[in-house]
Image (cartoon, rainbow, N blue to C red; front, side, top):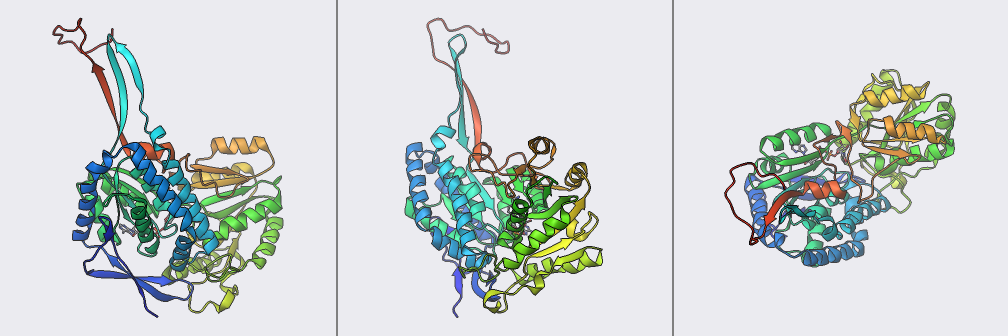
Length: 500
Ligand code: NAD
């Protein structure tokens, strides 16, 4: 079987140079290498940034009405090609096509938000702040901005960034994950078809070399990152040192609290959907189920019934509800928590190593839905972000104990509470130290016109992604004070300007 070749997209076309280094791109359902991706050298980083820099003056001066027409065309093209994009994602990531379609849909919502950019870029104006003096503010783009993204959402996470950045008048260099690079190239082609000028959107394939090149490059003005916490912290510190604006979204350990009064069927549906959708490789996946007693046994029984009916298989099989993990190495690391969990005192309520795979699974990176029960905070399975289909059940006696658990956890990305008690839910939303909260909603990913981002070790920086925080991140404000000559003007005054 021939393998696919993926390369950079620079200045409106595929890069033609020969790569010094390449990475393997796998089909996780079969375990076979399906493609080779070029890994950028420092010279290729320079070429991508130079293309973006050259495109900036023209794009910055492109009238808002023209920018918006291109955004609307891009939106239509994404809509028309969403299945094709979903299939590309599924083939390299492993998630099922229906789930990949959902990811494209959520990214598309940010493009739709960005179509309203003329309204969002309005500054303020105050007439006559002093005698015959007006004051106003304008929002201007930064220049070349970079996005560095993780493997788990190869379309949606880049789309948290570039629609807003480009709509604001910046030019963009995307460094996608080297594990699933195809979607980014197809997106670049769609931008070109929509009429985006060459160099406004560039894709740089690569690894740490590409990332470090962008972090050190003096022409890159801002960096948006989404990925694991150690790398997010590295990006934040390095980009800050090199004088860039930076937002770095990190890892997660999302707790779902089930109070004794909750509807346990709803809670079981939610725990299974949010724990095992996309094989748990979502930053908003539920990885810890906090059962406030006496619900644990009954809830676990309901989860068992649902997991028994789940179909695990290749992403392109329409029957599959859950696919494989992204690489063999990641699969093995995730599976290692089953042994360490048991060795440290947990019980294996459901063992995903025994799951039957539709079609036999070939040599793919499989691990079925797994539930570890009686997990406690000292165990590795609780402390680490596993990022796979492993749901840890922690049994607690009270609401306060559940809150302490979440408060003591270093991460603060998403959380959810399941209850029929409005007062308890309201108290939870007020007290919990987490950036995104669901009330009877297990994966509370904010809409495009709100902003996405966690607290604590789940985000380094001040701005969350998309929504108004995205617009602010990708613009800087200029405050103008203006006086137009009037017959009454004049007179030297060395005092500090005051109003009157
Ligand atoms: P990762 O941190 O390994 O990689 C993210 C990006 O950083 C990739 O583009 C990768 O090429 C690059 N990178 C990796 N190692 C690097 C290094 N040493 N130096 C410089 N760059 C490096 O993350 P991943 O495995 O691709 O994605 C999964 C992680 O992303 C999970 O931790 C998940 O929680 C997190 N995530 C977070 C969010 C969020 O919104 N907070 C969203 C999606 C994923």
